[in-house]
Length: 383
Image 1 (cartoon, rainbow, N blue to C red):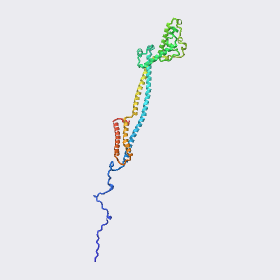
Image 2 (image 1 turned 45 degrees about the vertical axis):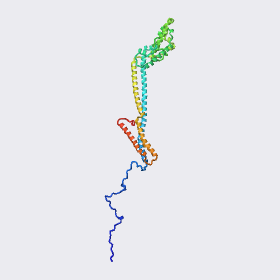
Image 3 (image 1 turned 120 degrees about the vertical axis):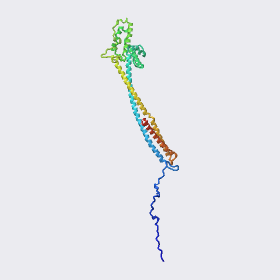
Image 4 (image 1 turned 30 degrees about the horizontal axis):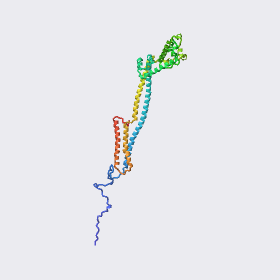
């Protein structure tokens, strides 16, 4: 009996031992790492819960940086204004001091010129006689005297001084001269020469109006001569025997050695009268011009000081522009952050719009300043 011989059959290897099949070029390769993730939305969807704290902190930080930069510029400007104010104060005070000094010199030069002209006007016997006789009307005196270019108010002061000087001279002579009935007319004619008599009066006061004293003396002598003439007969025996020392009294009559009193009672008219007048006028003109120039300098310094002390509207606009981003970018987000938000609410979404509006205001103001500079105008922020 024949045994059947087993026929070899094709035995397939196990699947786990088979090598991997090469990938076909048409077969897509699926790789999880190569698949891009979905693009996140600007704001989370209403149903999604996202912590808004980083968003609010970012707004606060960025706004704080911008406000710090621009606020630093404003603080620097205010510090600059403070320094400019101190400098303007110094310039203004120096200008005022120099103007005050020039004004005093102008007033002194003007008074010297007025004094010269007034005394020149009063150095006229006709005018002085009118004042001695009681005339004080400036209109009448101007018609009689020289033509001078000074105000009535200024001339009146000197007319009043001359009036007082006449009174003082009259009192002086009345208190020192003998009465008219003690000597004859010839005796009074001995003393009638004022140019000689004034040199020997010991207590003759110094005066700016020598002609006033001369006329007052002559008036006093004439009054006493009139009295003596009325009583000429009783005094005839003493005619021509009296001297000036007898008429005034020996205690008031002296001839001191090397004593010249003529300088105290001199007239202003002389060979240097016209040059002196020209010199005084020139001095006054220069002082007046200097005072006017310094007055203009004071006005310029005052204007510069006022501009520094009162900043223009551009600086205040800058402060308002800075205030708006500080409110919408710092204050409001801080308030929202303090409430501990857990998700994006409409109010927090609104913070994004206000933040961009603050940026728009800041950059808009910068564009506005740049436009002003390009037109050649000086904005107060940089002034």
